[in-house]
Image (cartoon, rainbow, N blue to C red; front, side, top):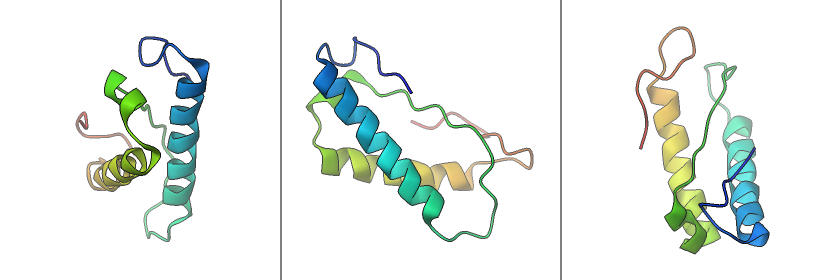
Length: 83
C-alpha cells in the first residue's frame, strides 16, 4: 500500500492513513457475508484525508466497503468507480 506525498508531506500522516485503511479492510473482510471476497481493491486517498480524524476515515471507508459489495459484477470486478 502506498500513500503519495501529495496527500501528506509527513510520513507520520501517510502511515496513519495506511493504518486506518488496513484496519478497516480487515474488519470488513472478517464480517460474515454470503458472497466470497476474492478481488483486489485500490484505495486512493484524497489530500483532505490528511486533515480527517481516524474515526471519520473509518466511517467513510465502512460506507465504501458496503458500496464495493453491492457494485460487483459476476467476475468480481467493480461495475463502476466509487467516490
